[in-house]
Length: 142
Image (cartoon, rainbow, N blue to C red; front, side):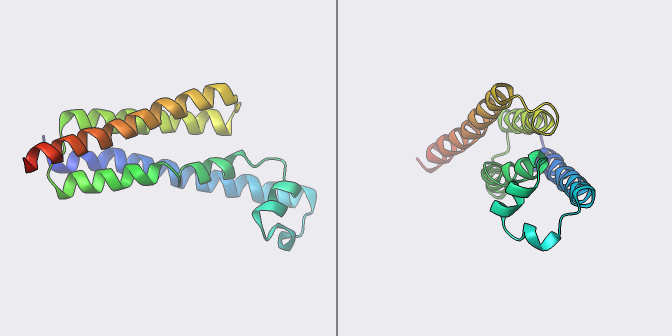
């Protein structure tokens, strides 16, 4: 196993974030035009959510900048410390695939219970990545 294999889940999650960003602006611009909204009235998140109806892509984009930050950090630490293992790679891919599923649910039919379940399982995978890293670091220093 090479250390850089952990970059492929990182690239995938980054691509997902970019796709959701594009979708967010496609939907937002279309709705602003359709409703004839002055863009200046959308200067804050509060006014935006009050004026626009279709904000799921924007909400999902925000979600992709929350717990995934911990994913990017752990992947960087795994590379820097040469602790990329098969276990870490499998957990990384599970996390990313579940985040893809979470995004698909969020920007399509948006069933909260389904989205929440996928979110919880993906976050458990992320915390497992951190736990495995912490344990391997502790044992390496003993």
